[in-house]
Length: 146
Image 1 (spheres, rainbow, N blue to C red):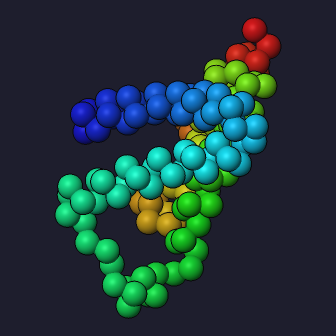
Image 2: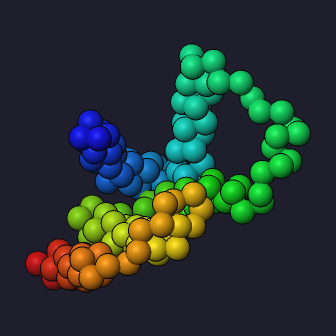
């Protein structure tokens, strides 16, 4: 479990790096949509190479047609995150941007956990979780003001 936590923290460090790289790319390309496109193109290339090396087979059309439609929004959610980061990173700075993202992630996570939606185990909302979210909001205010 600790190894997973360490990996998650390290990979979490990629988020401000990605926001900065993509925002810088947008300056060269003169549009945030173009930067997001290049970013996702790089991701597609990485996933293609990874699929080859890990011998991940392409699912059949029969399997794909059985997937509930709402499970196809992952790319849209990722695109909105990347595009938002590209636009807001230069304006907010890395600390404010990422603290806002983390706060939003925690609010959504508490809701998803409470109801056990989209494959998460149900974990009821608790006072500790609510207080934690309040502290995150206070953290956003503090890093924005100071």
